[in-house]
Length: 470
Image 1 (cartoon, one colour):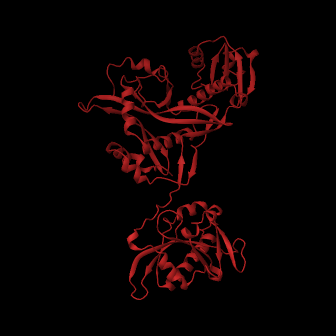
Image 2 (cartoon, helix red, strand yellow):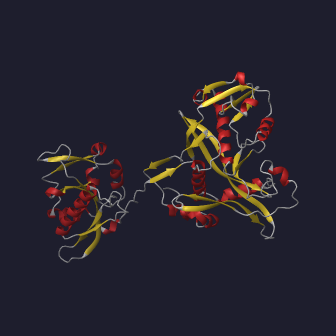
C-alpha cells in the first residue's frame, strides 16, 4: 500500500515551540509575526513592540529564533543548563543591528527561556564556546519580560538594518567523474606505422567508430583484445601482452599517464561518434567535439570535407534539435544556419554546439573537464574562415546562465546511454560534480548586472528555465 505524505515529529515539535513563543508574546501585549516556511533561515518570527496603555504599534521589532526540544538539555540541573548554538545560525544572528533573542523551550512542560544573543556573545570567551548558559530562575521567557524586551528594541532614530537571509547553494562544476574505463590494456607489435592505414583496414572489415587504440614505436596499444579479429590481422598475435589498466591510469610516470589519456580520448570519440558528435583538431591547438550537421545525402559520413569542396555555394540544411531532460523534458538546438543582416537570404555561417574535453586526475580518480564552445562552418562541413571572430563574439555575449546551461546539457549527453549505444563500453561517465555552499548570490543580482544582449539570451529559450545555481 502506498504511503501518504508524512510530517516528521521534529517538524511538529518545532511548531509547538513557535506556538509557545507566540502565546507568551501575546500575553505580553505585543504583536507576533512568524516568518514563512520559505523565508525561515535562522529567524522564526518578529515581535513588534506595542504601547501597553494606548495599544499603538511602535514599529520597533525584536527578531526571534525558537529552538524546541522534547528531552533534557545539555548538563541540565534544577538551576540551569547549556545550549550549544549552530555556528551558521550564530553568525547570522550577529549580523545587522536588529536585536535577536534566542528562545529555547520544552513545549511538553510549557518551559521557555531566553537570552539576547548579541548581548550574551559580546563576551569573546563565550563566543568561542558557542554555548549559552540558561539560568532557569533569571532567564524564563514569560509575560514578566515585556519591559526588558521593549528596552531591547532599537529606538527609531538609530535606524534598522536586517541582515540578508542566508542562501544555500548547490554548486555544479564542469568536472564529470569517470565511473568506468577499460580494465585490460593490450599491447602488440605491428607493421603499421600510420593511423590512416589502420583506419582503412578497419573500414574494409566494416568496423566503424572504433578509436580505442593508438600506434607508438612500432606497437599497437588498445582496450580491445588484440587476439581477436579484426585486431589480430593488424598486429603480430604472438607478441600480444595484457596489462592491468590501473598500472597506467594510476602511475606517477607522466608518459604512461599520457598514453592512458590517449585511450580515454579514443573511447570518448567512439562514444560520442555514435551520437552524431564529431571531433575537430585545429592546427597548433587542442581538439574539441561538436555536433555534426543535419544529414545531407550528398555528403559522405566518412569524408565530409572532401564532399564539401564540391559545393559551389552554401546549401541550407535544417536545424538539428536534440531532446534532453533537466527538470522537465526539453529540446536544444545544436546546429543551425545564421543569415546575413544585409542579405537575409544569404547563409553567413552554421553554428554547431561543442565542448573542449580534458581528462584530469585528482588523487586516484579521473575526471572529464567540459568547457563549452562552438564550431563554425561555412556550409555545415567546411570550417569558416571567420570562425575565431564568430567564437569571440558569442563568448562576449554568453556568460553566467548560458554557460551553466551548456554544462548541464553536455552532462546529460555524456552520461546518457540509450538502448542503441554502439560498441563495447570502455568508458562510462558520471554526472557533473556538485557541492553544497553555505552562501550564495540571488539570481536576480546576476540578471541586474548583465548587459542588454545577455539579458535577452537569459530570458529566451530553455536557458531561462535553468537556474544558475541549484
